[in-house]
Image (cartoon, rainbow over all chains, first blue to last red; front, side):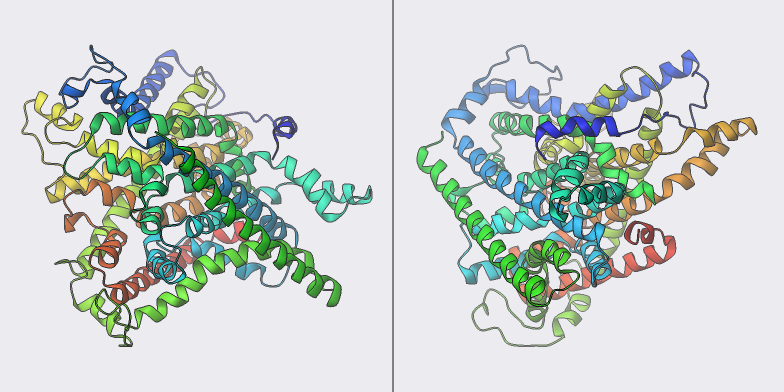
Length: 302
Length: 335
């Protein structure tokens, strides 16, 4: 999954001719093209607008946070809310806590999924079908359903108010979906490549590590992204496990504290949201070039 | 503010847990190596060793809690009886159907709300995702930029997106009421009246879910070879005929599992109904938020465990029928 191996993958992908039922070999008429652009621009506005509003509120000065003013950048914009969030509130600790948990669990999650998916893809071992059905079934279980036993078990094991339970849970919670994606992707890579490696004297695990893994970068990137966002965005489990441990709060819990039930610190909430959003959005957009091939390669083959 | 104390404390906690996980994995692998590989010389020793850590982890997080929860569902554990619950066997399961699961709401109206919620959302996710995917699947200027912007709702942390939307539904300052009053209508009480609140939930979740479907379906569209369309054109097929007899059938292997997953995720969505429903309107609860309230607000642990199994059984039955009917997930799993 290291960065230097990514170049191989991009060459591997064949350039397909892109067509649809709108586009049947001829050029679209200019009128139709304008219509399509207009429709897409409208959708983009809808996609971006709520975020822009959050940004607007974060720039408003403290005395007029609530306003019916619709301009994107308010006339009296200020960074006061950002200053309060960064220096007066424990926001950075929340962010740090989340970051430490998320990075550790995402890496472990990817390793678990990558190795398991290799077994599911390359061997017909007994119990394989049962295992795959089991993985699908885990997707049906409502998260809230597992919260009750996990919470009571955590109380009995003394894990409430610590990160132990959270870290263990996040490591495996995105694994079923990840195995599904990765297995589908490995299946599209010809086994001959590994066999060629075996003839040259590589062991099974070496050919996995040096042949299959580098070729699976798109899927691995997606799986990392999924593991990362699952842990980063989780609210439910963190709330159940951490309760009211002020020092250990993750950002999802902290930010909800800013948006209290009766009195919302809108400016601070918005500034904090923008700050939390930036790293995740960058990660997402950076990996968006792999998103399409990584997600669908496996399922379109069959 | 952030202090060294906080940094070190969380780093220490995470690090210690990661070490325990690593140690556990190494012990497991060594045991499996000696038992399967050296001692039994089993043909499938390596795949079992590869799968073992994930399976053990999932058993600890899913299977064991489920078994435990089943036992819990047979008891009357609640806040008062936390220390010494007694077995009441299947009474809880009976109660799910005969007593209110929340303060007033019974099980079946709640189920109806959930089905309606799931249907509306999945329908618009697929329709919107497909429309955008079709628009984007053509050579044109700015395609990459459009795609990037349209993925944004998926990229934003869900809790933030939902809380931001909740702000837009504010009676006085929210975008929607400003829009409504500017065209001369009465403002709507989005957060505290039943039907507008349900609409607000759906709007939010539709916005959140379209990008995922768009990306999946765009991938599916790109894998369809242009030759089919060329052949159809030579035969004089119309756009609609091409869509109906080439695009849709060839998109099916991608669409079927995506719809199944989308259904599960929507049915089990917690964040949107929980946060948009600020005033605990029972008319906006779906089964999983009801489950959360029954367990963590009303502390009826035994009862909510039974409730959870009823929900799980419903999804299981749905999945079996869906897979029977479409029969296409087989291709994904048995390839």
